[in-house]
Length: 91
Image (cartoon, rainbow, N blue to C red):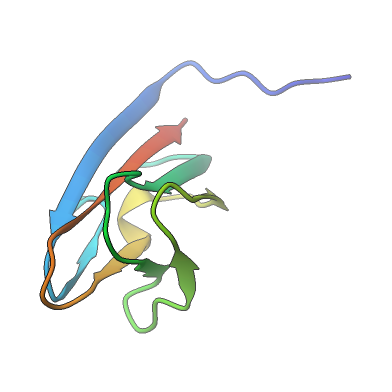
């Protein structure tokens, strides 16, 4: 079984309330992203692109995204509560 290996890992945390933000503001290459709605969140967050964030992550849930750039993945944060998303990118 061939398991892919990666030389560089990037990671970060993004926090927001009532807004839509990219995971990272500047372009940065990657092969794959893992996005996690922080387990301490009290509401769901949406994951998608700059136009629509259709994938809903409940607190503690994760999503693996094959992507070439970290900044093309956006998070929709709900109104009235601050939530957090954790991410790690392989390149």
